[in-house]
Length: 235
Image 1 (cartoon, rainbow, N blue to C red):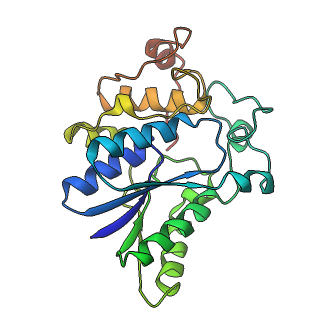
Image 2: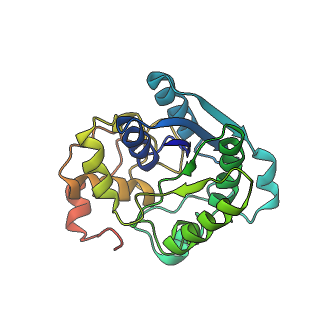
Image 3: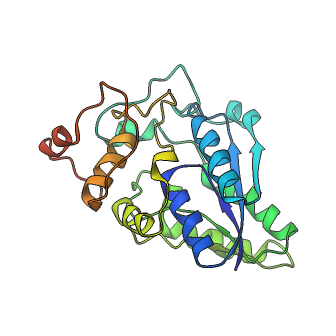
């Protein structure tokens, strides 16, 4: 398979990148700069793809941030919610139609290169609040991509039925450098360890039984404290 991977530099898409390469597929990686405040993920994407020696492009879409509804991911005026995700705090992290925008650009690059597919790493542990991570969305986009051009491509999303803990187990088996990936929405020097995505990351490592080598801010709560709070990953 020849595929364009939507690559954020985060944990999930890095596991998919390594899985694709370990299976012998040809991969080009696309990162989209949509004005996210956590641009450290772009630095991670550039570093990891450089180490792997694969072609990687960063598409500059920062101009679109002014067209979309406010999100704490793109606006420094909105605080990034801390603590365990609840419906209202999760909604603050939604960038409208983000995955469709990124898939569309990746599709154009894939078609240009006569590739077979676009790959993205949405997984079953992604919250129901994110409509563009749901299986029904992926199936609809797959059908649309098959109609988009004379050169037919498909959407490859193999993680839809897996949790983040599952992905960490997969990644550990193929030596994914998790410590070089970036998740934190705050985008500071270290992972804050307190925002919802950091807590989800830490809990997933704990559930997977894999050592988390990520560097967290000193004030981050301990994993033990998280477990004692009885927070569970969304099912």
